[in-house]
Length: 132
Image 1 (cartoon, rainbow, N blue to C red):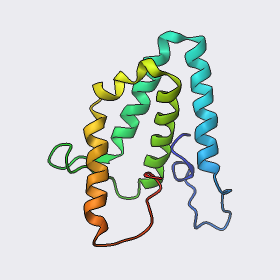
Image 2: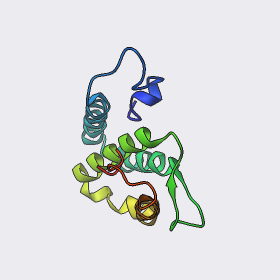
Image 3: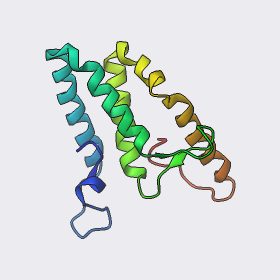
Image 4: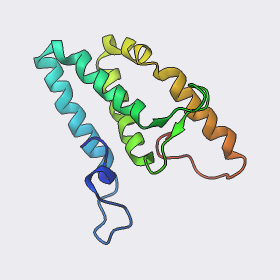
């Protein structure tokens, strides 16, 4: 559900478009549900955040280690939704932020930005969804 409209088999180009901001709203609603679960069951906090971080990392293509990682083709919208979800969860649950380091995501995410910025000179354009 967090992965956005693309994960539900819907595309922006379809004749029945989904509303502007729908993926973001869906992400926020699901995150608030997960945060409610974390409040009621504190023992699930690290499990929920770890799973979100692993799904985020699952959307990356790691080339030559973490320094040249990129987002898998066609997964930009999904990756953007998972980034949004992870930011919400990590900001709301500060004690779980160490899981970001344990999952090795810092170097991977920096690699994605570095790969995008190095290719930007070849094809200039707007910021990608996952970076905004």
